[in-house]
Image 1 (cartoon, helix red, strand yellow):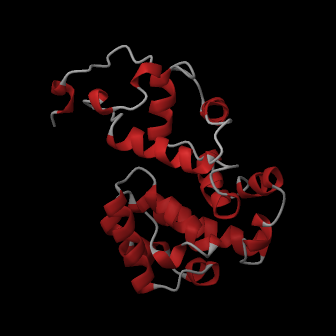
Image 2 (image 1 turned 30 degrees about the horizontal axis):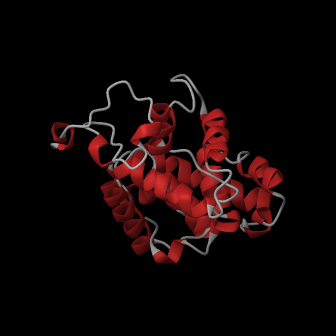
Length: 210
């Protein structure tokens, strides 16, 4: 999902996770490219930019009023708290690093975990998005009212005995996105349907129609 130039820089990674919130992958990338075309993606530059300038740069991605404000606030806070560099934070022990990341404005469990995957990978950190949430609940690993940390713990337990846990976690995400879809899940294609507790599952091809 992430543009290549965002993957090795924690701050750029942070900005694109903000842009990815409540929008499509296409819109997220479009907004990031718009921002990168106008500004160098650093805390110093974005903290100095006006919110109006940031808003215009990311307008194509949607929710630009909220996201431009958040980008501005994050840039100022990263400068003030961490001297503009998140790399030392990600070098801390995982739980300590997450605590510091969640002190940033607007950063919750998921965004912090997304950033932590750049160091720890999916073997130790599993960001819970709508796809993982849906899969865990349909499999019956958690109840419908389960919250982020409970879902995360349940999925970790589900793949705990796998030799390549990070690979399996990635495959489960792809399964949730493309097979166990929110609308008309393709149950007849699911390789783990025998484990599924979803009440509305169907083995017929009708559920695959779009």
